[in-house]
Length: 472
Image (cartoon, rainbow, N blue to C red; front, side, top):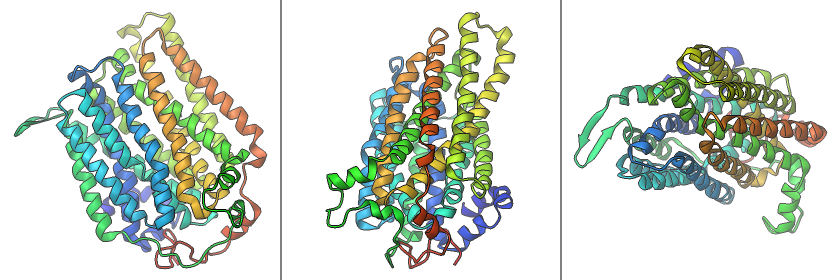
C-alpha cells in the first residue's frame, strides 16, 4: 500500500526534489502510519458523503437532515480534538491517541453499515467523529519533529495524501453502485457498503500503528521564541497562561481563518450534492466523479504549494489562497443569481455545467493555500511544549465551522435561496481578507524562531533522537 501511494506521488517528488526521499528514508513506519491516517480520512470522507443524502432519503429522513448528520460528525471532533491534543502533550504518545481514535472510527463505521434508520446513521457519524479528533495529536507530533523552514512543505506533502484518498475513494463508490447483497440480517448496498469498507480500513490502520509506529522519545528541549509565552512558575494551562498564549492578534487571526474557510467550505460541500441533483439530476455515482476530479485539482494545488513554500512566506501564501477562494465564490454567486432570475431547464445545462466545473476547480486550487500555511504559521507562533493542545484549539475552531457551515447551507439549496447562500459566503471571505490585511504586519514568525529553523534541531521530541521527516 505504501509503495503504491508513493508511486502515485512520483510527480510530486520530481517537483519538490528530495522531500519525499528524505521522508521515506527515515522512520518509515511512523511516516507510513501518519500518511495513511490522512489518506484513509480522505477515503472515508469521499465514500460516505456522495451517497449520504441518498442513504438518508432511503431511510425516510426529513428534509435537511444531511446537514444535521454532517454537523454531528464535526461536533464530536470539536469536543474531542483538544482532549486528544492535551493527552498527547501529557503522554508524548501520539501512538496511543491514534489507537484510541481508531477504535471509535471502527465502531462508528460498523454502525453506519448496520444502520436500520436515520437515527442510527446519526449516531454512527457521532461515534466516528469522536475518532476524528486525533488530528490534533498527529499535527502536534509533526510540528515537534520539523523545523520552521520545512514545516509548510512537510504539512503540504502529508495533507496531500488526504487528497489522494479523495481521488482514489470514488473508485469504491463506482464498484458499490450496483451492489445489492445480503449478509445474514444485514444488507450490503451502495449505501451501507462504505461503512463496512471503512470499518475494515481503520482496523487495518490500527494493526499497522501497533506494529510499525514508534512514539517520540524526549531527548532534549528546544528553546524557541514561542516558549517565552509561558510565564515561569505558572502551572500548565493556568488562566494567565491561556490568555498569554491565545489572546494575541496573530493567533486569533489564524483561528479566524481556520473557522471562516471551513465554514464556507463545508457549507458548499453539504450543498453540493443537493445542488447537482436539482440542476443536473446527478446521483451518488456522478457525484463521486465530481469529487474525484476535485481531488485531482487539490493534489495539483498541494504540489504547487509545496514548491511555492520554498520561495514565499506563509503570509503571502495565505493571501493567495483567500483571494482565489473569493474569486470562486464570486463565480458561484453569479451562477446562483442567473438561476434565480431565469427558469432553469435542460436547454441551458450545457453552459452551466462548464462554468460550474471551472468554479469547483478555482475553489479547490485556493483551499490548500489557505489551509496549510495557516496551520504551519500557527504552530510557529504558539508554544511548542503544548503544541498538541494548541492544535486542538485551532481544530476546535475548525470544528465549529464544520458544524455551522452545513447547518446554514443545507436548507438553502433551492433556486430561490441560492443567491443568499452565495452572497453570505462572499461577504464573509471579504471580511476575512480585510482583517488579514490589517493584521499582516503581525502575522510573522518570531526572530528567534527563524534563527532556530536555519540550523539542525537538537532532537527535541524526536523519536529515538531523530526527527520524523529529516534524513540526518
